[in-house]
Structure formats: structure tokens, C-alpha cells
Amino acid sequence: MSHVKKLEAISKKTGFPLASPELAGHLDSTDELKDYREQFVFPTLETLPRESTGDQSQKCIYLLGNSLGLKPKNADKYMQEAMDMWGRRGIYHHTSGRIPAAYADQPCKPLAAKVVGAADPSEVTIMNGLTVNLHLLMLAFYKPKGNRNKIMIEDHAFPSDRYAARSLMRVLGVDESRLIILKPGKDGLFKTSDILQEITAEKNNLALVMLPGVQYYTGQKLDMESITKHTVDLGIPVGWDLAHAVGNVKLELNAWGADFAVWCSYKYLNSGAGAIAGAFLHSKHHGKVPSHLEGWWSNKQETRFEMRDVLDPAVGVECFRLCNPPPFLTALNLAALEMFDEVGMDNLLKKQELLTGYLEYLLTLKLKDHLDILTPKNSQERGCQLSVVFRKDVSQIHGKLENHGVVCDTRGKVMRIAPVPFYNTYTEVLTFVNILTDIINT
Image 1 (cartoon, rainbow, N blue to C red):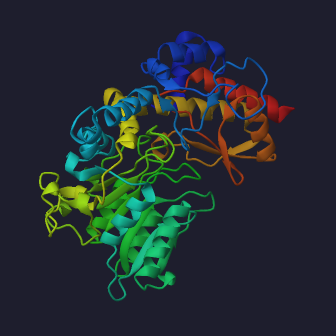
Image 2 (cartoon, rainbow, N blue to C red):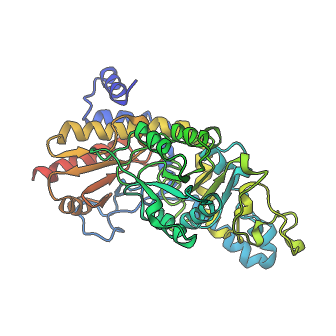
Image 3 (tube, one colour):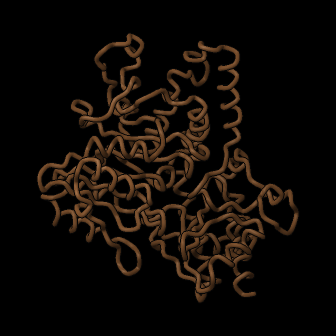
């Protein structure tokens, strides 16, 4: 059943019109995840660096989890614990506490493995930042040889991906003309059939396919399963940038057969700005990992302090670690991942489909003559985010929304709006659309 039909069925059952406060209130009161909202810290009108009208103690309408997720309240507790262990125990902080400093990534690994669909925690590691991990994994899997030296990325890729691919080619002496840039259709979206066709056409030249799970600008979720399986069948390494996908859409990296994947943790994983990132390496490579850069932390933790002259590589993706993950950043990551583990992705996605579907329905109902939604209508081809193009100046609209305590963002002509199932409500979505309608009609 589509999200629209679900909403219509609820409206019919309750007798409340779809665009009414009563219907939004009913959806909130019956929301199985409603209590999790209280586990996050919200900016208020008073704390935002914008002038706004109304009760200054009121929580803002935060619709920007696609850029920076809200802070879990447990983040304060876990961070303080790590600080206290450092202060009270000094060097013994390395081997004691909730997050022992020498093994700081270990508590997060099994939780992250579930979020990305790893078969075993050995396929996942918590380390570095996203682009660092992207470089490390791309360097391992991009082995140009003769004419088989092309990398495929998508047009309008997030700058990190473009910079990483081009700089890697330069370092390895490959001309940038060997970079294949996939072009979307006139609607700005990609067709899976076109991607598969392009990969097939270049199968003898491709040394790496590296694409985003969710396109940051349009919010489109690519068919990762079909693309991965097709690329693997052709013997071409495939990696995924999951910056906008992790914690936002269903991931089954092991089952799909992806060679590697990388992600950040400050968006939907709610681990704070500059948060520690993650990486995945499929178990099919664990017996023979491609050559890559190494450091002290690439050793097995059991033999690391033997200070061997020759590396004793850790099993799985941990052999890509270079140095000790910071316990203070892993504390923030753990505070967020524990909630994902408690709720489960299936329950999050169930609410997400209806919440973002409600936003889409209201925008279309009230403002169809004033805007276009770039993001696919099919809920299976998107996550939380809707990308909207207005027929008026988007910067002026955005500025007025900020004055009403609404937090979203713009990228060029597009406004990105992302209600997050962990902490956003149906009433907030309705209030946002009503404020937006008043602004546009004024």
C-alpha cells in the first residue's frame, strides 16, 4: 500500500481530514517511536542565531537531519564518562570503562554492522572521517592496468567524491579524461537501466565504480542492489559512499556483494559535527585483502603491543585502521548507535515512509502551483529527504522560514527538507507546510 493510501485509510478511519491538526495529532499519539523524541536535544528559538517571533523557549522545527543530526542526550553522559576515565585513571583508561581508549571502536562495531547489513562485525570498522576512508578504500581497490583504468562516478556527485577520484587518478598517473561521469535524465534523476547499460558498455575499461547510495542534491536512492550485483558479475570493483544513506535507508551490503563502502556519522547517525566515520569491507576479501596503506592500528589488537617489525594484520576491514580511534568521538557514535539497535531499521523506515509521505502529500495539496519536488515519488527510491524547487526566490523563502524557527537548508535552487523518524513529528510537518504556505502566499 502506498503512503498516500495509508494516510487516506487513517483519515477515513478517524474521520479527520488529512491536512487537519487532528489527523497530525492522531498520527503522533499512535506513533510507536514518539518517546524517542525526548532523547534528543533541540535548539530553541532563543538559541538559534536568527531573529524569530513567538515563544523563545519553543523548540525549533528541525528538518535538517540530512546535514547534521540532533544530539542524543546520552552523548553528554558517554562523553563525560570518557573524560572522567581519562582524568581519574590516566593510562589505565586504555583498558577500562564503557569505552576503553585502546579498543574505543569495538563497542560500536556490532551495532554499525546491523545498520549497514554486514554479515559479521569484522566487515565493519569505525575510524577516521568519510573522505579519509574513501581514499584508503579507493586506493586499495583502484588498480589501473592498461586500458582498464577508468573510474565511474555520478554527475553532481558530492564534492568529496569528485575530489577523491580525480586526485587518486593524478597520484597514480592516470589522465582525468579516464573519469566517467554518469549523467542523469532531464528530470535530474537516474534510471537504473541507464546505469547498468553504461557499466556494461565500459566493462573492459572500468577499474572501479564508486557511487552514492542516496544522491545528496535530489534525495534519490539508487538501486544499490541491482547496480552492485551487475558490477560484481562483470568483475569490476564497486564501492558506495553512504553519507546520505546510512541510518536513512535499508542497507544489505554483504548480501548485495559490495566490495567496500564508507560513511559519515553526523547526519542520520546523530553523532555530532566532525563525527568519526565508518567503513565496510566484504568478507569475500578477508582472505586476500588488496594492497593498501597500513599503520600500527592495522595490527591485530592481540599482538599490537608486541611491537613487531612486520605487521600482523587484523582480520577484515580493521587492517585498514592506521591509528587509535578517539574514545571521545566513539562515545558520541555509541550513544547514537545504541538507539538504532534498540529500535531497528525496519521500524524506523516504517515511520519514515509515512512521515516523508505526509510531507509530500501536504506540499502537493497546498503548494502544487508554487513548487516542484525533484525527489522520486516512489518511497522505495528515497529516504527522509525531499528536494524542492520553488518558483519564487528560494533564498528569501528560506530566510523567512528561519525567522519562524524552521531549520532546513538550500543547495543552489533546491531546498532540502528531511523529517527524521527518530525525532520529528507529523504535527511539525503540518506546521512547517502551513508556515511555508503563508510565506509563499504573502
